[in-house]
Amino acid sequence: MNAPTARDLETIAWQLGRPPTGVLAVARRCTYGYPQVVMSHPLHRQGEEFVVFPTLFWLSCPFLVAEVSRLEAAGAVKRCERQLAADPALSAAYVRSHDAYREERLSLLSPEDGEFLRAHRAWDSVETGIAGLRNPRRVKCLHAQLGHYLARGGNPVGEAVAAELPRLFCPPGRVQCAEGDREDLPCCQP
Image (cartoon, rainbow, N blue to C red; front, top):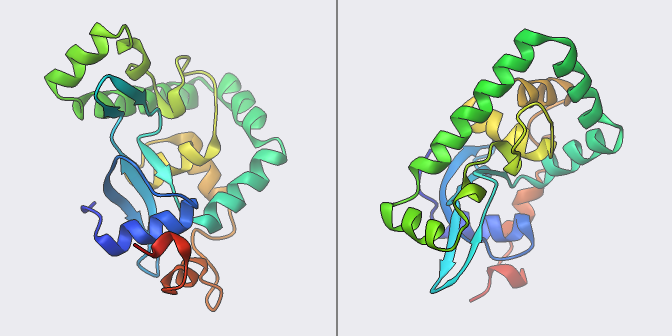
């Protein structure tokens, strides 16, 4: 994991279709060197205005986003929930991944952030698991599950999603993020 460069931030803006906020690091790069998963700070704050960001590891790769969207459209979220309900060991591993995720998110908050959130009665909003879930027996947002797995491992749902995909990067000759290297993209201009 490394701090994003200016070029990384331009690529991430192209990937997301908007300027990124709160990016702390590039948590994983694809085979071609482009950001694939970014790590985001859990609290985006401007004065007294704030947003608690539930996704610590954001899947930014447009190729993977599209592939995972297809899985979700085919009912993969419910299928994962059924598998967790049927397999106690898998469910326990998934709960552990939520616990690790929550602890890592909380570790990024300064004491001042904690005081601010408590004063605004929002502390419970950062004490959530993957994709902002409060119930670690539920599955939500396979993009967040895969992002967490690719960044940290140890997430059985993210691992299952990765196993269902034909590949974890763009096919050679069709590298989507290379399109973001063009200087004429509006998101990449000052």
